[in-house]
Image (tube, rainbow, N blue to C red; front, side, top):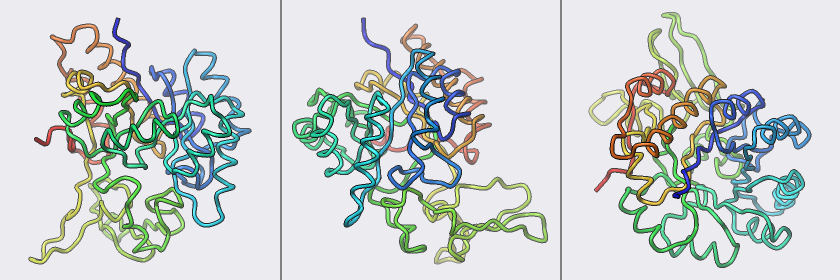
Length: 335
């Protein structure tokens, strides 16, 4: 029987971890509370000691946990990333998600039995690259960047034995993952090395006299919101800009979220082994809602592939929870 595709859910803290497991996640992915992971926000993530309760909960439910070590060390900072790998291995993580070649080399040589996954931050989008990582570092799974069509994923999977994990719900990055430099221009702090698109020390939310809000990044105004508008993620790519004709608009990216539920059977047929929910920085309620919807959708798809359809209640739950009010298939259906 064909193995059912996994639901991989984000866990930015213990409450979200438990919500993900209770809502049907097969595995949670998480990071340590430092710059070795790509969601390095204040008050988010775990120390190795803090993980003990979370791991116990995961194990009690028969599920798995993955540790993301998916940023890029600079100069002589490698020892911090090595220590993160050591900690993940000592905690007996079911998988370690890594982006950097040097860290992969260390993990492979030091812990040859470790289950290594290639992070989306490595931006490996073709089978030659993926097979290179498999031959040299023994990766078992690749998290694909959000730039491929369904047909491209199908062709890629036909040429590799590495498991394929794809993003299914949540934020959609418009840039090449692991290669974005937008925040570097504004703050001098790189997303790829600090682990945050907009480091919190540079972000400011201020109320306006009209009851709205302004959002700034290092004193650069990103957005001015009316009282009825919800706040988008405070990043350069989701800011409003004045265009050449004077219009103030979301010139790079509207606040919208990825939702692959309409094409779930196509992605499974293309060879996806796991579906990932973006959002370790998001709330417990977001994690619970997204995990529950994806769990129900995958179960329904495997139970009756021919009769699969997106249920109205799934759409209602995603729209109510997503950033903004728009959903997109991203690059998946680009011909």
